[in-house]
Image (cartoon, rainbow, N blue to C red; front, side, top):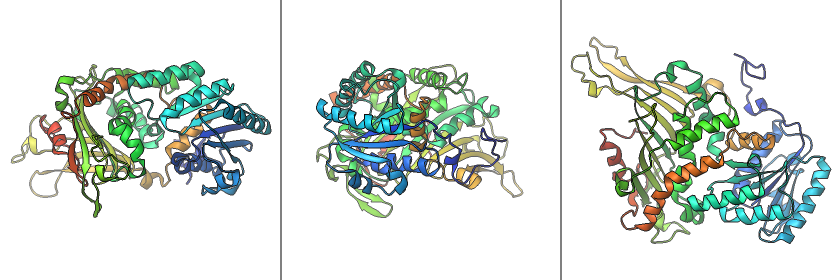
Length: 496
Protein backbone atom coordinates (compact mmCIF):
# COMPACT_ATOMS: atom_id res chain seq x y z
CA UNK A 1 0.00 0.00 0.00
CA UNK A 2 1.33 3.41 -0.96
CA UNK A 3 1.34 6.23 1.57
CA UNK A 4 -0.11 9.70 0.99
CA UNK A 5 3.19 10.66 -0.70
CA UNK A 6 2.87 7.77 -3.18
CA UNK A 7 5.69 5.79 -1.55
CA UNK A 8 5.59 2.03 -0.99
CA UNK A 9 8.63 2.06 1.29
CA UNK A 10 9.65 4.52 4.00
CA UNK A 11 12.86 6.48 3.30
CA UNK A 12 15.79 6.03 5.66
CA UNK A 13 14.91 9.34 7.31
CA UNK A 14 11.16 9.33 7.91
CA UNK A 15 11.24 13.06 8.54
CA UNK A 16 11.44 13.44 4.77
CA UNK A 17 7.86 12.15 4.66
CA UNK A 18 6.66 15.08 6.74
CA UNK A 19 4.87 17.90 4.90
CA UNK A 20 7.11 20.78 3.96
CA UNK A 21 6.26 24.09 5.58
CA UNK A 22 5.62 26.55 2.77
CA UNK A 23 4.81 29.69 4.77
CA UNK A 24 7.68 31.54 6.48
CA UNK A 25 7.43 31.57 10.27
CA UNK A 26 9.07 32.78 13.45
CA UNK A 27 9.31 31.00 16.80
CA UNK A 28 10.16 32.76 20.05
CA UNK A 29 11.39 30.40 22.78
CA UNK A 30 11.06 31.72 26.33
CA UNK A 31 13.48 29.89 28.61
CA UNK A 32 15.98 29.63 25.76
CA UNK A 33 18.93 29.30 28.14
CA UNK A 34 17.38 26.24 29.79
CA UNK A 35 17.66 22.49 29.49
CA UNK A 36 14.54 21.82 27.39
CA UNK A 37 15.66 24.22 24.68
CA UNK A 38 19.14 22.69 24.54
CA UNK A 39 18.13 19.01 24.67
CA UNK A 40 14.88 19.00 22.71
CA UNK A 41 13.65 22.15 20.98
CA UNK A 42 16.70 23.34 19.05
CA UNK A 43 17.74 19.77 18.08
CA UNK A 44 14.19 19.10 16.82
CA UNK A 45 14.10 22.30 14.76
CA UNK A 46 17.59 21.55 13.43
CA UNK A 47 16.46 18.07 12.31
CA UNK A 48 13.44 19.56 10.54
CA UNK A 49 15.79 21.99 8.84
CA UNK A 50 18.22 19.29 7.71
CA UNK A 51 15.32 17.20 6.38
CA UNK A 52 14.30 20.09 4.14
CA UNK A 53 10.97 20.65 5.89
CA UNK A 54 11.48 24.22 7.04
CA UNK A 55 11.00 27.07 4.55
CA UNK A 56 13.85 29.24 3.33
CA UNK A 57 12.67 32.17 5.46
CA UNK A 58 12.22 31.61 9.20
CA UNK A 59 13.74 32.70 12.49
CA UNK A 60 14.26 31.25 15.96
CA UNK A 61 14.49 33.90 18.65
CA UNK A 62 15.69 32.75 22.05
CA UNK A 63 14.47 34.79 25.02
CA UNK A 64 15.56 34.39 28.64
CA UNK A 65 16.86 36.35 31.62
CA UNK A 66 20.45 35.23 31.06
CA UNK A 67 22.69 37.87 29.44
CA UNK A 68 24.34 36.69 26.22
CA UNK A 69 24.72 37.67 22.59
CA UNK A 70 23.72 35.80 19.43
CA UNK A 71 27.14 34.21 19.04
CA UNK A 72 27.20 32.79 22.56
CA UNK A 73 23.61 31.55 22.20
CA UNK A 74 24.43 29.71 18.99
CA UNK A 75 27.58 28.18 20.50
CA UNK A 76 25.43 26.28 23.05
CA UNK A 77 24.07 23.95 20.36
CA UNK A 78 25.57 21.20 18.24
CA UNK A 79 23.58 22.07 15.13
CA UNK A 80 23.92 22.76 11.43
CA UNK A 81 25.75 26.10 10.95
CA UNK A 82 23.27 27.11 8.26
CA UNK A 83 20.40 26.49 10.68
CA UNK A 84 22.12 28.48 13.44
CA UNK A 85 22.27 31.49 11.11
CA UNK A 86 18.50 31.70 11.60
CA UNK A 87 18.87 31.79 15.41
CA UNK A 88 19.27 34.90 17.55
CA UNK A 89 18.83 35.87 21.18
CA UNK A 90 17.43 38.62 23.39
CA UNK A 91 17.57 39.01 27.15
CA UNK A 92 14.09 39.45 28.64
CA UNK A 93 12.79 40.17 32.14
CA UNK A 94 9.59 38.13 32.26
CA UNK A 95 8.03 40.44 34.84
CA UNK A 96 8.85 43.76 33.13
CA UNK A 97 6.46 45.24 30.50
CA UNK A 98 9.25 47.51 29.24
CA UNK A 99 11.36 44.48 28.46
CA UNK A 100 8.52 43.11 26.33
CA UNK A 101 8.39 46.36 24.37
CA UNK A 102 11.99 45.74 23.36
CA UNK A 103 11.07 42.16 22.55
CA UNK A 104 8.22 43.38 20.34
CA UNK A 105 10.54 45.69 18.41
CA UNK A 106 12.95 42.82 17.81
CA UNK A 107 10.15 40.50 16.68
CA UNK A 108 8.70 43.10 14.32
CA UNK A 109 12.12 43.59 12.71
CA UNK A 110 12.52 39.83 12.24
CA UNK A 111 8.97 39.43 10.93
CA UNK A 112 9.54 42.11 8.29
CA UNK A 113 12.71 40.32 7.26
CA UNK A 114 10.82 37.08 6.57
CA UNK A 115 7.69 38.90 5.34
CA UNK A 116 5.24 36.85 7.41
CA UNK A 117 2.90 37.11 10.41
CA UNK A 118 3.13 33.38 11.25
CA UNK A 119 4.44 33.55 14.83
CA UNK A 120 4.76 30.97 17.63
CA UNK A 121 5.61 31.60 21.29
CA UNK A 122 7.00 28.58 23.13
CA UNK A 123 6.99 28.79 26.94
CA UNK A 124 9.86 26.48 27.94
CA UNK A 125 9.88 27.98 31.44
CA UNK A 126 8.77 26.91 34.94
CA UNK A 127 4.97 27.04 35.34
CA UNK A 128 5.06 29.97 37.77
CA UNK A 129 6.30 32.14 34.89
CA UNK A 130 3.43 31.32 32.51
CA UNK A 131 1.04 33.98 33.78
CA UNK A 132 3.47 36.97 33.80
CA UNK A 133 4.68 36.07 30.30
CA UNK A 134 1.12 35.71 28.98
CA UNK A 135 0.11 39.03 30.57
CA UNK A 136 3.09 40.87 29.11
CA UNK A 137 2.57 39.36 25.67
CA UNK A 138 -0.93 40.81 25.79
CA UNK A 139 0.15 44.23 27.10
CA UNK A 140 2.64 44.52 24.25
CA UNK A 141 0.08 43.42 21.64
CA UNK A 142 1.96 40.24 20.74
CA UNK A 143 -1.03 37.97 21.42
CA UNK A 144 -3.02 38.92 18.33
CA UNK A 145 -3.90 36.27 15.75
CA UNK A 146 -2.41 34.37 14.03
CA UNK A 147 0.14 34.18 16.86
CA UNK A 148 0.06 30.87 18.77
CA UNK A 149 1.35 29.98 22.22
CA UNK A 150 2.75 26.62 23.37
CA UNK A 151 2.86 25.68 27.05
CA UNK A 152 4.59 22.69 28.59
CA UNK A 153 3.39 20.49 31.42
CA UNK A 154 2.64 20.63 34.27
CA UNK A 155 -0.48 22.63 33.47
CA UNK A 156 -0.95 23.90 37.00
CA UNK A 157 -0.22 22.16 40.28
CA UNK A 158 -3.80 21.17 41.09
CA UNK A 159 -7.33 21.78 39.83
CA UNK A 160 -7.50 25.32 41.21
CA UNK A 161 -4.18 26.46 39.76
CA UNK A 162 -4.96 24.74 36.44
CA UNK A 163 -8.23 26.66 36.20
CA UNK A 164 -6.44 29.88 37.11
CA UNK A 165 -3.92 29.28 34.33
CA UNK A 166 -6.72 28.48 31.89
CA UNK A 167 -8.57 31.69 32.78
CA UNK A 168 -5.40 33.64 32.03
CA UNK A 169 -4.95 31.83 28.72
CA UNK A 170 -8.61 32.42 27.83
CA UNK A 171 -8.26 36.11 28.70
CA UNK A 172 -5.35 36.73 26.34
CA UNK A 173 -5.58 34.00 23.67
CA UNK A 174 -8.38 32.18 21.90
CA UNK A 175 -8.57 28.39 22.15
CA UNK A 176 -7.34 27.82 18.59
CA UNK A 177 -4.19 29.80 19.47
CA UNK A 178 -3.34 27.62 22.49
CA UNK A 179 -1.23 24.45 22.15
CA UNK A 180 -0.80 22.48 25.39
CA UNK A 181 1.98 20.06 24.64
CA UNK A 182 2.30 16.52 26.01
CA UNK A 183 5.23 15.07 24.11
CA UNK A 184 3.92 11.51 24.59
CA UNK A 185 1.18 12.19 22.04
CA UNK A 186 3.88 12.98 19.48
CA UNK A 187 5.50 9.55 19.73
CA UNK A 188 5.01 7.33 16.69
CA UNK A 189 4.42 4.29 18.88
CA UNK A 190 1.72 6.06 20.88
CA UNK A 191 -0.07 7.15 17.71
CA UNK A 192 0.27 3.59 16.41
CA UNK A 193 -2.11 2.45 19.15
CA UNK A 194 -4.86 4.22 17.20
CA UNK A 195 -3.93 2.55 13.92
CA UNK A 196 -3.69 -0.87 15.56
CA UNK A 197 -7.10 -0.49 17.14
CA UNK A 198 -9.07 1.22 14.40
CA UNK A 199 -7.50 -0.25 11.26
CA UNK A 200 -7.68 -3.89 12.39
CA UNK A 201 -11.23 -5.13 12.76
CA UNK A 202 -10.13 -8.48 14.19
CA UNK A 203 -8.78 -6.80 17.33
CA UNK A 204 -11.45 -4.14 17.75
CA UNK A 205 -14.11 -6.84 18.06
CA UNK A 206 -12.43 -8.28 21.17
CA UNK A 207 -11.43 -4.92 22.70
CA UNK A 208 -14.00 -5.00 25.50
CA UNK A 209 -15.00 -6.51 28.83
CA UNK A 210 -16.23 -9.74 27.25
CA UNK A 211 -12.70 -10.74 26.33
CA UNK A 212 -10.24 -8.51 28.24
CA UNK A 213 -9.40 -9.50 31.80
CA UNK A 214 -7.34 -6.41 32.71
CA UNK A 215 -4.89 -3.86 31.34
CA UNK A 216 -1.45 -2.95 32.71
CA UNK A 217 0.41 0.27 31.86
CA UNK A 218 4.00 0.68 33.06
CA UNK A 219 6.27 3.69 32.70
CA UNK A 220 9.57 2.80 34.36
CA UNK A 221 12.82 4.75 34.55
CA UNK A 222 16.13 3.50 35.89
CA UNK A 223 17.41 7.04 36.55
CA UNK A 224 16.71 9.14 39.63
CA UNK A 225 15.72 12.81 39.68
CA UNK A 226 19.12 13.80 38.21
CA UNK A 227 19.27 17.59 37.66
CA UNK A 228 15.50 18.04 38.15
CA UNK A 229 15.43 17.83 41.96
CA UNK A 230 14.22 21.42 42.40
CA UNK A 231 11.38 20.85 39.95
CA UNK A 232 10.52 17.39 41.23
CA UNK A 233 10.34 18.46 44.87
CA UNK A 234 7.48 20.81 43.91
CA UNK A 235 5.69 18.38 41.62
CA UNK A 236 6.14 14.71 42.49
CA UNK A 237 5.50 11.74 40.24
CA UNK A 238 1.70 11.80 40.27
CA UNK A 239 1.66 15.28 38.74
CA UNK A 240 4.71 14.69 36.56
CA UNK A 241 3.62 11.43 34.91
CA UNK A 242 0.03 10.46 35.71
CA UNK A 243 -1.83 13.73 35.15
CA UNK A 244 -0.62 13.83 31.55
CA UNK A 245 1.38 10.95 29.99
CA UNK A 246 -0.27 8.06 31.79
CA UNK A 247 -3.87 9.21 31.39
CA UNK A 248 -3.32 10.13 27.76
CA UNK A 249 -1.97 6.66 26.93
CA UNK A 250 -4.86 5.11 28.87
CA UNK A 251 -7.31 7.19 26.84
CA UNK A 252 -5.87 5.95 23.53
CA UNK A 253 -6.09 2.34 24.66
CA UNK A 254 -9.67 2.60 25.90
CA UNK A 255 -11.43 5.38 23.92
CA UNK A 256 -14.23 4.82 21.43
CA UNK A 257 -13.42 5.24 17.71
CA UNK A 258 -13.84 8.84 16.55
CA UNK A 259 -15.87 9.41 13.38
CA UNK A 260 -12.68 10.70 11.74
CA UNK A 261 -9.13 11.49 12.76
CA UNK A 262 -9.29 15.24 13.01
CA UNK A 263 -8.62 17.58 15.90
CA UNK A 264 -12.06 17.92 17.44
CA UNK A 265 -13.50 14.44 16.81
CA UNK A 266 -10.39 12.75 18.17
CA UNK A 267 -10.16 14.99 21.22
CA UNK A 268 -13.90 14.69 21.94
CA UNK A 269 -13.61 10.91 22.27
CA UNK A 270 -10.47 11.20 24.37
CA UNK A 271 -12.16 13.52 26.85
CA UNK A 272 -15.30 11.36 26.90
CA UNK A 273 -13.18 8.39 27.98
CA UNK A 274 -11.41 10.35 30.72
CA UNK A 275 -14.79 11.47 32.07
CA UNK A 276 -15.78 7.81 32.40
CA UNK A 277 -13.01 6.97 34.89
CA UNK A 278 -14.49 6.21 38.30
CA UNK A 279 -13.38 8.69 41.02
CA UNK A 280 -11.13 7.27 43.73
CA UNK A 281 -12.82 6.65 47.11
CA UNK A 282 -10.76 8.85 49.42
CA UNK A 283 -11.70 6.85 52.51
CA UNK A 284 -10.24 3.69 50.93
CA UNK A 285 -7.33 5.31 49.12
CA UNK A 286 -4.82 2.70 50.23
CA UNK A 287 -6.71 -0.02 48.34
CA UNK A 288 -6.52 1.94 45.09
CA UNK A 289 -3.27 3.91 45.08
CA UNK A 290 0.21 3.12 46.40
CA UNK A 291 2.77 5.85 46.91
CA UNK A 292 6.49 5.09 47.05
CA UNK A 293 9.90 6.75 47.32
CA UNK A 294 13.24 5.15 46.40
CA UNK A 295 15.85 4.44 49.02
CA UNK A 296 19.45 3.40 48.56
CA UNK A 297 20.07 0.50 46.22
CA UNK A 298 21.84 -0.83 43.16
CA UNK A 299 20.80 0.04 39.60
CA UNK A 300 22.61 -1.43 36.61
CA UNK A 301 25.38 -2.67 38.92
CA UNK A 302 25.98 0.76 40.46
CA UNK A 303 25.19 1.84 44.02
CA UNK A 304 22.89 4.86 44.06
CA UNK A 305 21.71 7.15 46.86
CA UNK A 306 18.21 7.41 48.30
CA UNK A 307 15.90 10.13 47.00
CA UNK A 308 16.31 12.11 50.22
CA UNK A 309 20.10 12.03 49.72
CA UNK A 310 19.95 13.53 46.23
CA UNK A 311 21.33 17.09 45.84
CA UNK A 312 18.54 19.63 46.14
CA UNK A 313 16.12 17.27 47.91
CA UNK A 314 14.84 17.96 51.44
CA UNK A 315 16.18 15.36 53.87
CA UNK A 316 12.62 14.87 55.20
CA UNK A 317 10.93 14.98 51.81
CA UNK A 318 7.62 13.17 51.43
CA UNK A 319 7.58 13.52 47.65
CA UNK A 320 6.70 10.33 45.79
CA UNK A 321 8.97 8.84 43.12
CA UNK A 322 6.68 5.85 42.49
CA UNK A 323 2.93 5.46 42.11
CA UNK A 324 0.80 2.39 41.39
CA UNK A 325 -2.96 2.58 41.05
CA UNK A 326 -6.03 0.61 40.09
CA UNK A 327 -8.92 2.28 38.33
CA UNK A 328 -12.14 1.39 36.55
CA UNK A 329 -13.82 2.90 33.51
CA UNK A 330 -17.57 3.06 33.95
CA UNK A 331 -18.93 2.57 30.47
CA UNK A 332 -20.41 -0.33 28.51
CA UNK A 333 -17.16 -1.34 26.84
CA UNK A 334 -14.98 -1.52 29.94
CA UNK A 335 -17.34 -2.05 32.88
CA UNK A 336 -15.69 -4.36 35.42
CA UNK A 337 -12.24 -4.40 33.76
CA UNK A 338 -9.49 -3.15 36.11
CA UNK A 339 -6.71 -0.97 34.72
CA UNK A 340 -3.46 -1.20 36.68
CA UNK A 341 -1.03 1.70 36.24
CA UNK A 342 2.46 2.08 37.66
CA UNK A 343 5.33 4.48 37.12
CA UNK A 344 8.51 5.16 39.00
CA UNK A 345 12.13 6.22 39.12
CA UNK A 346 15.16 4.09 40.04
CA UNK A 347 13.45 0.92 38.83
CA UNK A 348 15.48 -1.95 37.30
CA UNK A 349 15.20 -0.76 33.71
CA UNK A 350 13.76 1.91 31.47
CA UNK A 351 10.63 0.70 29.71
CA UNK A 352 7.18 1.96 28.81
CA UNK A 353 4.62 -0.63 27.80
CA UNK A 354 0.89 -1.27 27.67
CA UNK A 355 -0.28 -4.86 28.14
CA UNK A 356 -3.84 -5.84 27.28
CA UNK A 357 -4.34 -9.16 29.07
CA UNK A 358 -7.19 -11.33 27.82
CA UNK A 359 -9.25 -13.75 29.88
CA UNK A 360 -7.97 -17.23 30.56
CA UNK A 361 -9.55 -20.24 28.90
CA UNK A 362 -12.52 -21.50 30.95
CA UNK A 363 -11.42 -25.16 30.84
CA UNK A 364 -8.27 -27.06 29.82
CA UNK A 365 -8.74 -30.17 27.69
CA UNK A 366 -5.07 -31.12 28.02
CA UNK A 367 -4.35 -33.79 30.62
CA UNK A 368 -2.05 -32.62 33.39
CA UNK A 369 -2.28 -28.97 32.34
CA UNK A 370 -4.83 -27.09 34.49
CA UNK A 371 -6.36 -24.01 32.91
CA UNK A 372 -4.86 -21.86 35.69
CA UNK A 373 -1.37 -22.83 34.51
CA UNK A 374 -2.00 -21.63 30.96
CA UNK A 375 -0.88 -18.03 30.64
CA UNK A 376 -3.51 -15.83 28.95
CA UNK A 377 -3.15 -14.22 25.54
CA UNK A 378 -1.68 -10.74 25.80
CA UNK A 379 -1.12 -7.90 23.36
CA UNK A 380 1.83 -5.74 24.40
CA UNK A 381 2.60 -2.29 23.04
CA UNK A 382 6.22 -1.39 23.79
CA UNK A 383 6.41 2.40 23.55
CA UNK A 384 10.09 2.66 24.50
CA UNK A 385 12.73 1.34 24.02
CA UNK A 386 12.70 -1.39 21.31
CA UNK A 387 9.41 0.03 20.06
CA UNK A 388 6.93 -2.47 18.73
CA UNK A 389 3.98 -4.80 19.37
CA UNK A 390 3.89 -8.38 20.63
CA UNK A 391 1.12 -10.97 20.63
CA UNK A 392 1.55 -13.72 23.22
CA UNK A 393 -0.24 -17.00 22.55
CA UNK A 394 0.00 -20.71 23.33
CA UNK A 395 1.55 -23.27 20.91
CA UNK A 396 2.18 -26.99 21.13
CA UNK A 397 5.63 -27.90 22.33
CA UNK A 398 7.34 -30.29 19.81
CA UNK A 399 7.08 -33.47 21.89
CA UNK A 400 4.81 -36.55 22.00
CA UNK A 401 2.42 -35.03 24.55
CA UNK A 402 -0.01 -32.14 24.19
CA UNK A 403 1.92 -29.57 26.17
CA UNK A 404 1.14 -25.90 25.44
CA UNK A 405 3.88 -23.29 25.70
CA UNK A 406 3.55 -19.51 25.63
CA UNK A 407 5.34 -17.84 22.71
CA UNK A 408 5.48 -14.30 21.46
CA UNK A 409 4.97 -13.03 17.92
CA UNK A 410 6.93 -9.78 17.76
CA UNK A 411 6.92 -6.73 15.52
CA UNK A 412 9.71 -4.19 16.01
CA UNK A 413 9.75 -0.88 14.16
CA UNK A 414 13.50 -0.89 13.66
CA UNK A 415 13.60 -4.47 12.34
CA UNK A 416 10.73 -4.10 9.89
CA UNK A 417 10.96 -0.53 8.62
CA UNK A 418 14.70 -0.11 9.13
CA UNK A 419 14.26 3.56 9.95
CA UNK A 420 14.92 5.88 12.86
CA UNK A 421 11.65 7.00 14.39
CA UNK A 422 11.24 10.77 14.57
CA UNK A 423 11.46 12.43 17.94
CA UNK A 424 8.12 13.47 19.43
CA UNK A 425 9.14 17.13 19.49
CA UNK A 426 9.92 17.06 15.77
CA UNK A 427 6.35 16.03 15.01
CA UNK A 428 4.73 18.35 17.53
CA UNK A 429 6.75 21.45 16.58
CA UNK A 430 5.80 20.84 12.97
CA UNK A 431 2.12 20.63 13.95
CA UNK A 432 2.37 23.87 15.95
CA UNK A 433 3.92 25.73 13.03
CA UNK A 434 1.22 24.36 10.72
CA UNK A 435 -1.51 25.13 13.28
CA UNK A 436 -2.76 21.52 13.63
CA UNK A 437 -4.13 20.94 17.20
CA UNK A 438 -5.00 17.22 16.88
CA UNK A 439 -2.19 15.87 19.08
CA UNK A 440 -2.46 18.61 21.69
CA UNK A 441 -4.55 18.79 24.83
CA UNK A 442 -7.73 20.82 25.11
CA UNK A 443 -8.92 22.74 28.18
CA UNK A 444 -11.55 20.15 29.10
CA UNK A 445 -8.89 17.46 28.64
CA UNK A 446 -6.88 19.05 31.43
CA UNK A 447 -9.77 19.77 33.76
CA UNK A 448 -11.11 16.22 33.77
CA UNK A 449 -7.66 14.78 34.57
CA UNK A 450 -7.20 17.24 37.43
CA UNK A 451 -10.71 16.49 38.71
CA UNK A 452 -9.70 12.83 38.97
CA UNK A 453 -6.36 13.36 40.71
CA UNK A 454 -6.95 16.51 42.77
CA UNK A 455 -8.76 14.61 45.59
CA UNK A 456 -5.78 12.25 45.80
CA UNK A 457 -3.30 15.10 46.11
CA UNK A 458 -5.43 16.80 48.76
CA UNK A 459 -5.72 13.56 50.76
CA UNK A 460 -1.93 13.18 50.70
CA UNK A 461 -1.41 16.79 51.78
CA UNK A 462 -4.06 16.71 54.52
CA UNK A 463 -2.80 13.47 56.08
CA UNK A 464 0.95 13.27 55.32
CA UNK A 465 1.63 10.64 57.99
CA UNK A 466 -1.04 8.20 56.84
CA UNK A 467 -0.09 8.65 53.20
CA UNK A 468 3.68 8.95 53.57
CA UNK A 469 5.40 7.08 50.71
CA UNK A 470 6.56 3.51 51.20
CA UNK A 471 10.34 3.29 50.76
CA UNK A 472 11.57 0.80 48.16
CA UNK A 473 15.19 -0.10 47.40
CA UNK A 474 16.48 1.49 44.20
CA UNK A 475 16.76 -1.17 41.51
CA UNK A 476 13.53 -2.95 42.48
CA UNK A 477 10.02 -2.71 41.00
CA UNK A 478 8.67 -0.53 43.78
CA UNK A 479 7.33 -1.19 47.27
CA UNK A 480 5.73 -4.48 48.28
CA UNK A 481 2.43 -2.63 48.69
CA UNK A 482 2.31 -2.16 44.90
CA UNK A 483 2.47 -5.93 44.44
CA UNK A 484 -0.33 -6.39 46.96
CA UNK A 485 -2.47 -3.87 45.08
CA UNK A 486 -2.76 -6.24 42.13
CA UNK A 487 -2.28 -9.55 43.94
CA UNK A 488 -5.38 -8.94 46.08
CA UNK A 489 -7.31 -9.29 42.82
CA UNK A 490 -5.62 -12.60 41.96
CA UNK A 491 -3.31 -11.04 39.37
CA UNK A 492 0.38 -10.14 39.12
CA UNK A 493 2.45 -7.42 37.53
CA UNK A 494 4.16 -8.52 34.33
CA UNK A 495 7.84 -9.45 34.59
CA UNK A 496 9.75 -6.83 32.60
